[in-house]
Structure formats: structure tokens, C-alpha cells
Image (tube, rainbow, N blue to C red; front, side, top):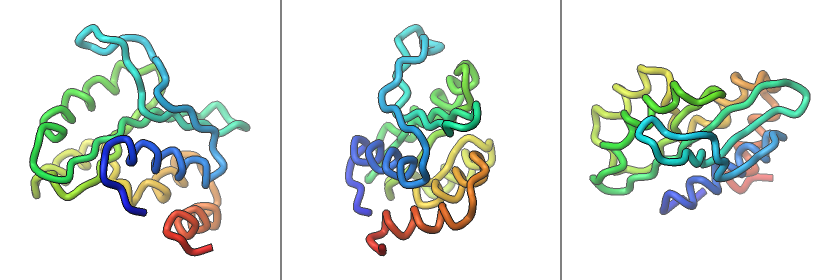
Length: 140
């Protein structure tokens, strides 16, 4: 899957959720951010037969830029969400030491690992995640 922008990453995250059989909502208003503005969560996934929900913020950065600088504040904001939340990263523009530092906090998932991560979070069969990955990579 070729992703070249934040909007494309958001769309791809939604497609992963759909491929896994999850309910998908995009740009969900969920209260206010810690700095006062309305909170729009990029993607919210839920599993219909359970009460599990997950909010996802999508951060894309192809070259060095400001997305990296905003992520620690976004991770802090996740603490105030009424549901569990993660940040999905994609792109080559994040500095070398940045991803390992953030992934150690347990709230950061690289897009290429998202289907696997969601499988465990939503307690889905391994086969469903494998089928979703194959579909998203163009192998039916």
C-alpha cells in the first residue's frame, strides 16, 4: 500500500479496520483536547460483539518536519480520552531514535504492524489478520 500523506494514512488505517471486520468511524468528535480545542480523533475502531473501542491518531512524516514534535503532546492527550488510544506512525521522516523512544511508551504503533497489533487488542483470530494483510498488500 502506497501512502504519501496524512489523509492517505488515515484512509489506510480505516481500511485495515474494515478488512479485520471492525466497525470504523473517521473524524470522531470526542470532547476537548488538553489545550482547549475540540478533539477530532482520526479513526475509531470498535468490535460490534464487545465493548472494545480504540481511537487512533495518524501521523505521517516523509521528511524531517513538525509531526515528530507534536507526537509527545498527542500521546499525553490520549490519557484524557474516554477510550484507549494509540498513535499510528508512517513515513521515513521520523528521526532514527524517535520511534524506539515512543514505542517504549506503549502508545505508538507503526502502520506496517497495525493489523498484528489490532489482532491482539481486539482478540481476533490470526487468520483474519493474515487475510487483512494479504488483501491490503494486493494478494487475494
